[in-house]
Image 1 (spheres, rainbow, N blue to C red):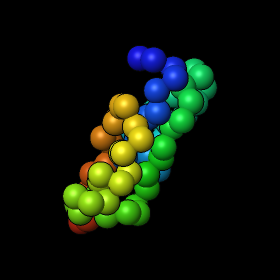
Image 2: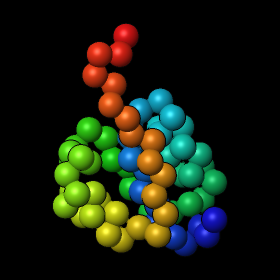
Image 3: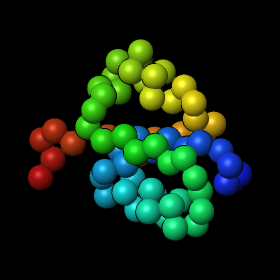
Length: 68
C-alpha cells in the first residue's frame, strides 16, 4: 500500500471500519476518508462522489437493520 494514496473506508464509524481507520492513521496513511451513515451508499451517484478522488476503497459498511 502506498502511503500517498487517498483511502476511503465505508462504514468507517462501525466496529471494523473504525479500527481500520485508526490503524491507517496510526501508520501514516494520509487522506483517509471515513464514511458513516451518510450519504446513502445504495445510490450509485453517492458512491461515485464518495470515491472519486480515492485510489483505494475498503468496503466495511453493512446493513445492520434488525440485528441484535
